[in-house]
Image 1 (cartoon, rainbow, N blue to C red):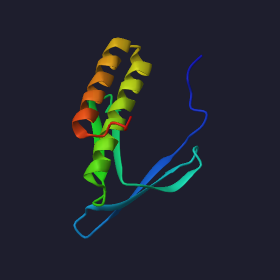
Image 2: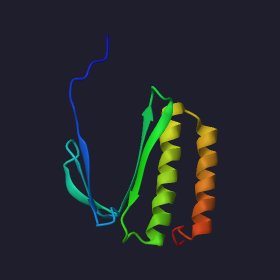
Image 3: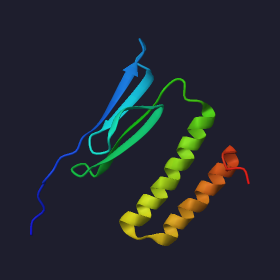
Image 4: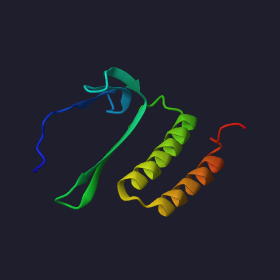
Length: 115
């Protein structure tokens, strides 16, 4: 049986820019997630270009995103990447190595939760 599209879903990101084209506000909407104009301070979007065999990406953050928030955002994103990589490839050992690095990163950035 051949795969065919039976449904479409849409994710939209609205970015408000100042006169210098710097992001000052972001909102996102997901039609299947009951999310409408949810505020966000940062985003990282990576998409695989199969023709060029390369990653296309967009990294944006608003001017009011603090350094502390950015450190947490990166830490959590790296952890999510480890989980996604393991789920997609089954590479448990390498994913654990990445999680170990995430702990090191969080320790260096002082974003580990208090015990």
